Figure 1 (cartoon, rainbow, N blue to C red):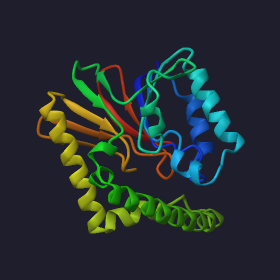
Figure 2 (cartoon, one colour; figure 1 turned 90 degrees about the vertical axis):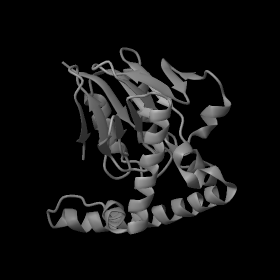
Figure 3 (cartoon, rainbow, N blue to C red; figure 1 turned 120 degrees about the vertical axis):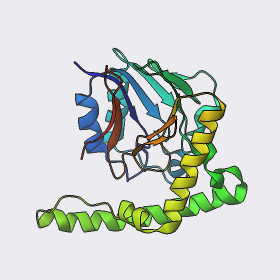
Length: 242
């Protein structure tokens, strides 16, 4: 028996940082009744600067279209694929596109599914968006360094290690940002009478209870290769595929 629902986000197709081999393996093996693509599936920001679209990224799109023939697939727009927000009711194969959705869990609870960029204070102003683009540039450099480090680790038989994730854990500023992001989302879920909220955006997979509100982030496919999984009994977990 497969899963009841699977949530993935931040694939960043069109970016060199997309872990396309791991992603393809996951998509070929996953069995689920519903698949939610929770934003930043295509990296429009980077594609605008420089075209990068290897054959593996075509294969990922084809796999998603194949899955949509027997599974309900929903693509939620994010800030990197915000072009979806300007084109109403566009579908890719059988894949439906939305800005946000409501997911009713096996437990009967109501969850808001949204990428999360609208709760990021940096995305609310022109200056903040400029900072985000600069942050993207820094992230590019960081992932490039991490690639070299992991090549060396692999040579000596060590498992892959995420420099970006390590720095996020150590940096107080990053910790504060993640905490504020969660707080804003939980506040909104409570205000709109949701039982929980499911998102991506910050590349930090987590399941956390905030009093009566459940906050769940499905992570990313640039570093952690993670998915948020719901089983048929209403249990939730984060799985890693790298």
